[in-house]
Image 1 (cartoon, each protein chain N blue to C red):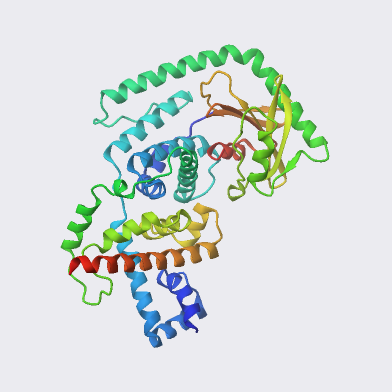
Image 2 (tube, rainbow over the protein chains, first blue to last red; image 1 turned 135 degrees about the vertical axis):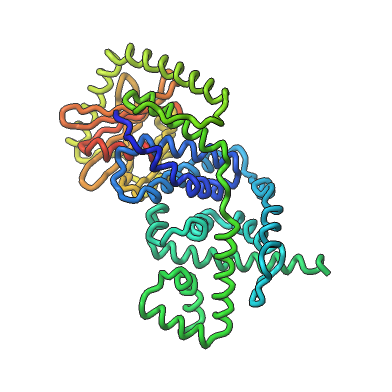
Length: 184
Length: 253
């Protein structure tokens, strides 16, 4: 079998997108690295069958598939994913970034911890909603591209994204409300 | 427009994915309804906040690790261009693991060459015959799958191993179902997929030696036959699909 020249150059351009999707699906840095590596090897093997013009959705579909397989294989052994662990080091960064931002007068949902809370809320969202939020907000994919990655119709993408964002807002509001007594 | 409907449309509106009439109607509604306008603002903040803070930095070691493993995988396939340079930061460990991988794979190749001659010819013949037989019969399947959950338990009562059963319709391979067959003097599981008008038989059985084997595509009597191993199982996929299409299964199964 011939190994297609150019795979590496093409695929590595999308490494950040691949890693982010893997991270948000498996919610662990170490595991995300393993998933990405396995997905890239699979993609290399399947590359001869790749006919599309845009590699990113094709590659992300393989990453997603690999991540779900990985999650399934883990489901029996350990069911607990530590969100705190997944976020080691996140708080400091989030806080620093927030400190650098000018407070927004119009903001309804303010608070130093907002972004951090939001990311925690995202980590807790069911995977079907989490993945569309990540592909949309972090990767900036269009609905059509997200449909190609997940194999779901565009209507489904639209309603999952809509519900996902509203759930995030709800969780965030609750978390901020919980915090208030402590702040006083 | 009612608020309930408006709430569903705010998200695609913010994403610029809402067309013509809905777009105008929602804009009018948002101008008039404070509750929905606030929701729209909040959702935009949520979206922006995640876009800003959710991106994870790729660990520096991952790139080196991927380059190394891709290069190793390509080298093994034989015809790959000499691998791209490893970045300087890839340490001794990587080189050592590459050497080890290369040794393991050479051993694998030697073993493969030796056993190829007889065993494989025989298997090819069996698989080809079973495939043709399945096409001659009324139906190639003994258990039909509305979804994979039906097929897997069916196999588990009949085989001493448990093949992974997945419907791959999203990727263009519809799972029709499964059956048993007899290949290489043993009972094997067969997953039957359909792609457009072509039937694909995927034969699965436990892989004896435990070493993973690289995918190989051959043509026999007008059929394409792709075989590989994954996680201790041997897969032989056969169909009159083109080799390229058949190879898509590799990334999926």
